[in-house]
Amino acid sequence: MSFRIDMSAGELFDLVRPVVTIISALVATWVLASVRRRFPLYVAILVAVVTFLFPLIVFPLYLAVLLLWRRPKYELVRWRFVIPLVFLAGTVGTIAIYKYIDDRRVDSYLSRATMKRVAHDPAAAIGEYQRALEIEESPHTRKLLANTLEEAGLFGEAIIEFRKAEQGGESDDSIPFRLALLLERKNQKKESIVEYKKFLGSKTCKELDYRCEVARQRIEDSEITK
Image (cartoon, rainbow, N blue to C red; front, side):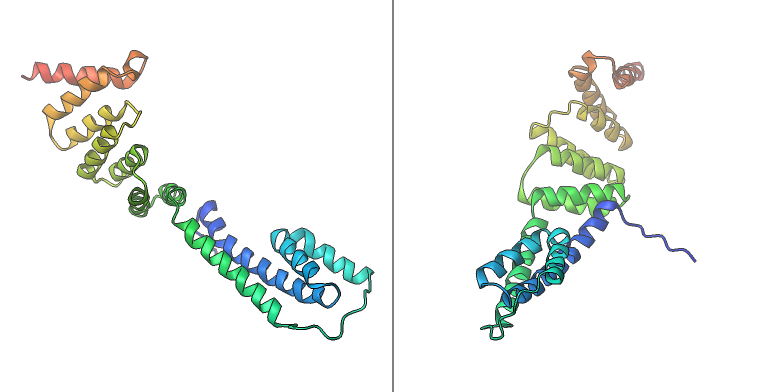
């Protein structure tokens, strides 16, 4: 029996990263408790912080030091368990706050939207784009949302978002062509011809582009059928 995990590399990384971070915090806490029995508190805290940041380097080195250098332990250590627990609580709390803030940044929403599109989940991608727009208005994000709405077959909503992207100053001058195709699908022939004409006057059509010929043909066909 074989199992297939339907998960992108980005989603897997987002899933594994918090687990690895928590493990690093636990290892750093153990190192703090251990170092405190051999060195002053400030040294223990410094080593614990460096261990948290670079666990794969510092932790093996510390274990090697313990094996090779038998430094005498302090028998009586004040707050032996309290300080490591406070360190662990502070570290985990900082991680939780950082993740909460990081997950709600515009870039995080856009990144998740891209991963959802790659995973062929347009509904989830649409939600991520909409949340990004709630935080920061962006004509480019509007265009990305319109693209995803079109992929999901929501042509009316895609037209609205493409127009908002245009009005916001999106530099992609192929939007009129996309709008024309969508308007054709909704049987709005006159409006689509207006968009085709607008596209023919764009910078893109001053260069060689197959869509320009499509637009010209659509305009000619509309004039013949008048």
